[in-house]
Image (cartoon, rainbow, N blue to C red; front, side):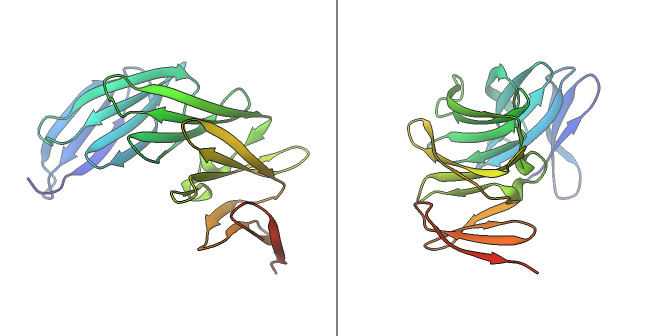
Length: 213
C-alpha cells in the first residue's frame, strides 16, 4: 500500500482512526477507541501514532500503524490531567505539555516498551497558562542540548520554563520574558514577544534585547 493518510475523528460516544488510501478509500480502521472521551492531541512518530484523549484522566495511547490495513493499540497509560501537545525526544520517549490544576504540566513519558508505558517524571507550575496549549509553534526543543523551552503567561509576570531532559526532567532555569515563541539558533537561544526579541547563550545568559517596532 502507498503511504497512508491518517485522520483521528472525534465523535459521540466514541473515537475512531481511519487510514485512507490516496484515492480516499479506507485502507484500515480502529473504531470505538476511548468511548465518551475527547481527543486532545495526536502525534505520528515513525509508524506509531500517539493519541491523547481526556474525560477525567489522561489516557495516552500508542497505536501501531505498521500494518495500515489492521492498526492496533500497543498500550496506553492513564494519568491525571491531559497533554495538549506531544513532542518526541529520544529512545521511545515523549514530552507532553498541558494544563494541570490551573497551571502547566510538562511530563516525560517512556514508550520504549509500548505495552508497558510509564510517566517517568513531570514538572508543574501553578497559576500559569502556556500558548503551547493552542499553538505548538510556541514550543521549542533542542536534541543537541536536550533542552525544552515552554513559554507561560501568568500574573504578575510571564516567563519561559527551560526544562532539561535527562533520565528525568529538571528545571534548568526560569527566564523572565514575555515571550510567545522560543527557538534555537546555532549557538544561541531566541525568545520572541510582541514587542521584544531576547537573545541568550545556550546556558541561558542574556546577551541582548531588541525592541520591535
